[in-house]
Length: 267
Image 1 (tube, rainbow, N blue to C red):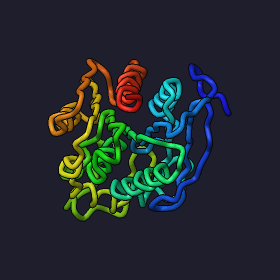
Image 2 (cartoon, rainbow, N blue to C red; image 1 turned 90 degrees about the vertical axis):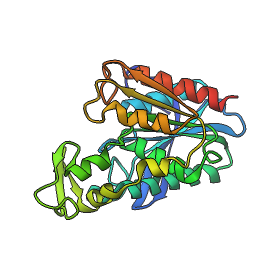
Image 3 (cartoon, rainbow, N blue to C red; image 1 turned 30 degrees about the horizontal axis):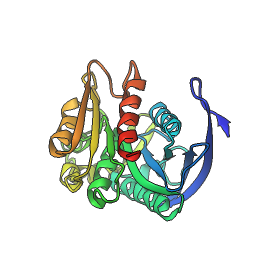
């Protein structure tokens, strides 16, 4: 057990490694002190250049634990403590990372219903994996927090995370682009150009919750609204004047996610 950041209580946390698409993934499995048989669990997916210790991920994990629900949050390849080079990261191989984590959870006999949540690019990964695996895989539901459905449109416009990809044909990008201190590889850009985000996500027909902020300048809230409109069995929460990370009060997004999962996983 270890002490989380200020505002968090002690948590039962087990560090695990899971084989991913580009090497081993480092994950934190957080469980209630008294864990019931077939304990419900939520997989948490961080965003672009983030890691498993982001405030949203840790906050959701802590509040889920208080409700008797386990969680597993992990670093995607090339992020945090996981193996792999960031320059080789793409959304498709992050989807495979998340699939490996799902398979690991399924193979562990301690857990029952599974839910999944993702922020920003992690929301895109979450939506597409849910579309591929279907509602039987995620009986605990799906939560998207400011899902970055804009990333395909950005690639078509020749930008990534607000940075220009370079001169010329966006289908022939440079070897890498410098983004927020990271080398983002050409494979990411090329994959993003053709990424069937909403088409793939449409395969999911189960319960969902989509949360976005009106002040999100990274991903306009209309991209989150489109998921809600596509998923007929979804909740929509638009937070007035909240940004991409749900400032000024990220705990509001945490509360919405945990309330949704508690309803889906505990009944």
